[in-house]
Image (cartoon, rainbow, N blue to C red; front, top):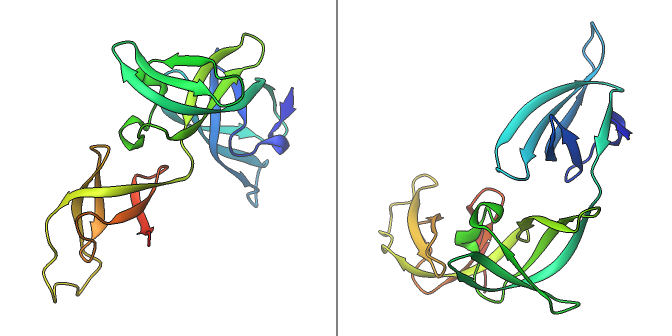
Length: 187
């Protein structure tokens, strides 16, 4: 059991009969009335995001989860296959359990969350930033930079990312996996 004072990003709790990850939280102390905690919860099974408010001090049941490093090997008809970097065992996850599949390339290291009591895989998470090569983008027009204008670019995994006009084809960029946005150019 934990209270709202123990909330942190990435904490896994049992709520409404499902497992939820806390992706954002904010402790609010209004001038009038009791304090409360606003949260954004992400369902581990479905990926659905729920906004919920807990009154301060409420007890919640935490779920024991373990993070284990894995490497993406390949995709087949059954889902995505990963290899444990310590024991070299293979784990297969369904497509709905891999929310960032279009940013993942073969050999990519990911973290898989396992429910500690049942040893079942719950979801896979990419690192915060991944480096990808742009395979196609329209050339930027010189002088068309009065504002922060973005253009679509297709990266090596097939995902479409909005990038600034000065980014060209065959350049390596860093992509934020939480927001699917361009972060910076990699030299």
